[in-house]
Image (cartoon, rainbow, N blue to C red; front, side):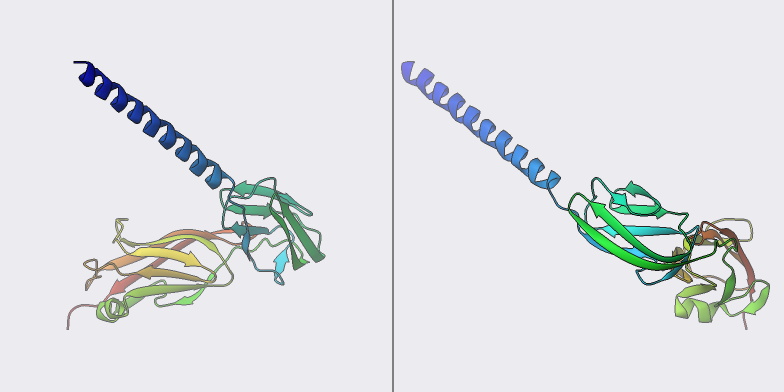
Length: 218
């Protein structure tokens, strides 16, 4: 019986030691993660660009930056990005961004405020197109839209009744792209609508609605 109690006591002591070691290790991992430095990755529009006085600049970091300050405009951090909102003074702009782990200077040429919304200037289809060949679009596996300036936002391919067809939409720079998802090919003699909303760096918005009709089977 004495031997049994001694074995049980040793087992309890071993389990306690393992739990203490595991607890200490977990704390070190959390501290290491919290201490990860934030490095500057990119700016949009990039340094050297011309921007409007009422534009915004989006800064991207590899980790969330702390204690962000800017020499012009107002900084609005959100996770790994910081949006620097104007207004900026027209003329040369040297924007210094400072955060807990470093400093970055960006240069821009600032023009008068922009009040013009972005416009669609081209693409795979135009609003009002008829007899569009669905086979050609399905083979290409994408539909593109070209805008008059860099924009952000979203677009979707819908039926005439407003149902999402299931293509993947993305907006980047001056191009909006709808990518085919296998099994979601468009059909013949059908009305489709490319719908969405985009905005430029100054916050001017534009509603997108491009309607086209595919041709019948030959």
